[in-house]
Structures are given as structure tokens and as C-alpha cells.
Amino acid sequence: MKEPPKAGEKAREFELPDSTGKIRTLAELLSSGPVLFVFFRGMW
Image 1 (cartoon, helix red, strand yellow):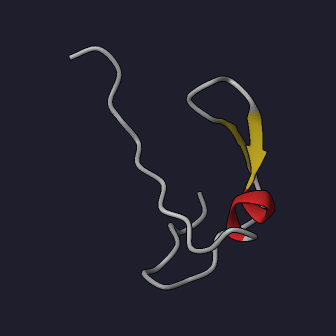
Image 2 (tube, helix red, strand yellow):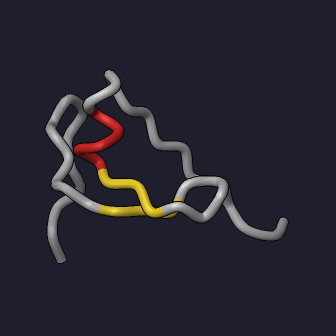
């Protein structure tokens, strides 16, 4: 198992769907400025 990234460490490139389902890349989002990812737990 790999170690989790440390605070301030750059993330590896990846793709995720946005809230509308469109696939977004990290590079695409970073081109507009800093990026913050928030993960919500599924059903409570």
C-alpha cells in the first residue's frame, strides 16, 4: 500500500466526474487556479 500524500505535496494527475457528470482532469482544473477536493460520505 502506498503512503498517502503529505500536506502540501502535489497530487498525481487524475480524472473525476464533476457534479454534472462531466469528466474533469486535475490539469484542466488547475489551469483556472488552486483546486480543493471535498469528498462526501455516501448515504448516512
